[in-house]
Length: 79
Image 1 (spheres, rainbow, N blue to C red):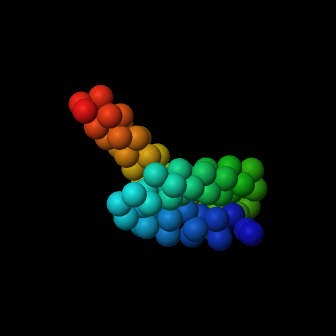
Image 2: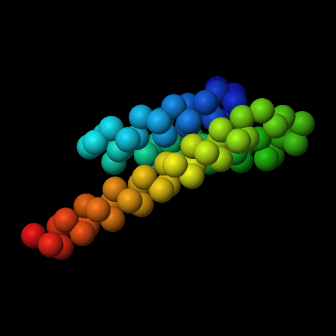
């Protein structure tokens, strides 16, 4: 799988991570694939395709992950 394919996968997963209850698994996967794609693109300086998609996938993935798990912890504390 090329880094561009991983970047596209990251952006698709980040779009799907807004589905309730699935976001606990999909959002970290979006972050991971975006990070992996970004690092491969950074390592290969000649290839720049997919860099923005990888960054967007990482940002959405990490923000939804933090929000979801924070929400879960707050819900558990307030029981």
